[in-house]
Amino acid sequence: MNSSEENDQSRRSFLKKAGTGTAGIIAASMFPTIVPASIFGKSAPSNKINIGQIGFGRIGSSHDLPEIIKNEAAHVIAVADLDKNRLAQGKIWIEKKYAERTGKEKYLDVKTYDDYHEILARKDIDAVIISTPDHWHAQPAMEAAVAGKHIYMQKPTSLTIREGRQMADMVIKKKVIFQLGSQQRSINPWPQFKRTCELVRNGRIGKLKKVYVGLPGDPAGGDPTKMPVPANLNYDMWLGSTPEIYYTKDRVHSQTDMLNERPGWLRLEQFGAGMITGWGSHHIDIAHWGMDTELTGPIEIEGKATFPAPGSGLWDVHGDFLVHAKYANGVDMEIGGTNPNGVKFEGTEGWIFVSRGNVGVTASDPGAAASAKENKAFYASDPKILGSVIEQNEIHLYESPEQHQNWIESIQNGKQTISHAEIAQRSCSACLIAHTAMKLGRKLKWDPKKEEYIGDAEANATLSRPQRGPYGTTKVKG
Image 1 (cartoon, rainbow, N blue to C red):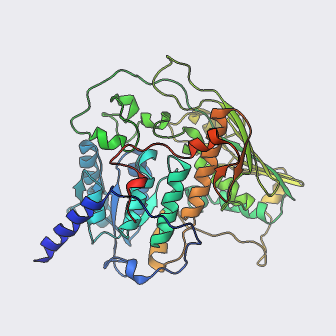
Image 2: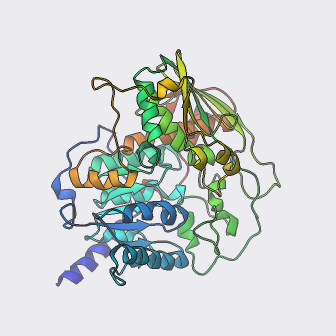
Image 3: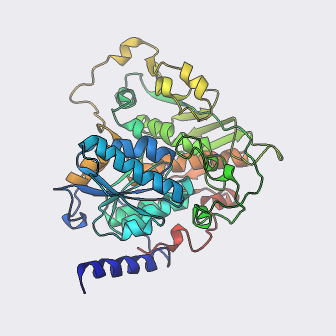
């Protein structure tokens, strides 16, 4: 048997196994700082790190790929998407970017796949970037870990808390390098977030008492008219583990402006929780970093929200909302749209506010116009706080140059990333807990060690969802 036949047989074997069986998940433990050399592909880290891009849409084309292609050590050689039109666009886009960077018109022949399992089956691919809809995060990440691929994944971590726990445990068990797209942690392009968290952790505003997180809600709308499924879209697989439901454009993504228009799935609870996870994963993660609670969660939470009225359109995620959470260290967190978009830390001796400034949300996100006016990205009750020197013997937080670069460097040196799987699970779970509080409209008690609600069967029923086969995290062997 020649090497090509061996690769084909290996790929067929992997595809046959992918998505079937029950995962045997090991309980979470501390992620190792030393990674065995055996998990690296033959082309990494001494040569190029071969990368497969899973999902080519708005976030993949505008953020993930532009950042990763800048890195000389990275080599994006394959792309997968369930929409054949986007898949074709992805190949052209990636090849063009490499041609521009290298000055060589035919520098790269990017392979395309309409099933991402084909990428995972390739022995010459060392890592994957997962830039898919929220309901397609946890499963491919778990399968990538089983295949020994390093993972960069867009936030939020998962559709449910149980899926997120399964994913984090699998990544830890398989000892692959994982990075969540929580780019506010990296100093490029927003050094003010790390600086804020260091000032708070070193007591520059006294004892931390309260954290305010500002997030907008989503508007109602969306056309519910049933439409024929486009011939270029594998709609059944796109739905994945979520229930079967008829196709309409505003449930999926635009077929005319696929790389810029905000996709409809972001506003449907079948596929996510709305802005509480969409942007909450960013801001609550920063709140956790400053509070020193990034490996735990709240102990008590209550909330309320408005949801679209029947007949107001297709979309059903939350609108305006207000959530209060309490942590074991005594800090209270308030999350809602009445606060400016960003994070405010309030202590006994002052406060600090931090945000992305005039790029608070992307142009197609709700609240974009208001956020553009909130152009103060970093300010405090006393300007002297901001200039305070962090001494050598004080707390210095992990410094990441840029989120994708940190991932690549961690693959090369085997060190933990700035947003590893356990941190990712905790930031996402806090958002999902807040969403449950909004839906139930009453106070809930949470056990962050067991990751379950205390004495509340109705709330605990939200920790997982039934998964439509043959898809789902429960089908992943590992």
